[in-house]
Image (cartoon, rainbow, N blue to C red; front, side, top):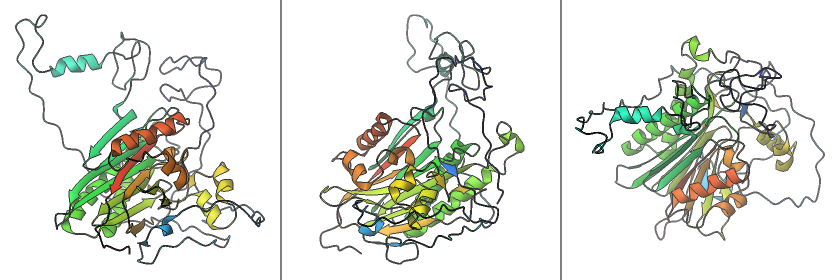
Length: 452
């Protein structure tokens, strides 16, 4: 693995994200007025964690254990019947010894290129009307639409250059990726740039299909680009699209959902690895940064099974429709904070309050440690919803109880509305990160069906 030290970056323009020199009053790239820019708030972006040169983690000294703690017990994956990727019953991990060691990432097989989207068909130009000033066209002229799209949304006067900035006032134009909403059958997802980031580095895929017996299957994939890596938005897009495509191809063939999930994560990792093999010009603007990287979390609901898979600190939550039953977190973070808790060195409150909490110990990317996809299979005994999300949401609703409190009671019937409520909660609470969530309903099991 190529270890690259993190360098302190210059302050960036809040409009175009170009580096600034100390004392600048205006951005040299886009002309943005910097005098009115408030001091940036405290933020906790997703960063990769690099260990000592020999692979050992520099652990803090353990804190003395306080007896008689009244800290409430968090509901975890073991509260929902299921098995892990090895077929063993799920259990809450016991504190490990302090000498935890990370292995370097092993070479994967030859990476495959990420799936390219189908080229759209060239639109047919409509016949020019005889009197265009008096009669509107029956179909919009693509040339007229293109011209209209080039007008700046801020000053309404300047034209927009190829990089998306106004040639008159320098204002960055809204991008389609800043806010995305999508539904596919019973599943829905939303991704939003948030209130502090200059771009959205998250992406997702949602879809529904049918198993060989004709029964329905739904899936959701959510990826969070690693902010300390170069082109994190491309990494999350490549991973989410590749994982979604693999699941859509495997499930109708009869592949077991948990095996399909493992295949999807491995394929997503190869797609992100392939981004690092592109020409050196792709890293021209950020030569000091790591290879493209992202986290991944995904869920499949099929034939009474709920399967989740993940690498990194994006999470999946289970919230039953009957809110008198406990909600649960179905994933365990690959992060510094989670390792501290597992090793018994800190409790969750202490670990996640630390500035190193969001340093991840597992991710997809050429500079990652050894790829270890986590998968788990559950058989809930009641109906509910699965929430698949990035830390841009769970930072503001971390425990299963908090997530269940924010989620509308009719989430299974109106998943898109529920996703909007959850994203709105994160934005109202500060929106310091990109926010992405998918809402996947889990139908009630057939009468007489028991839990595994």
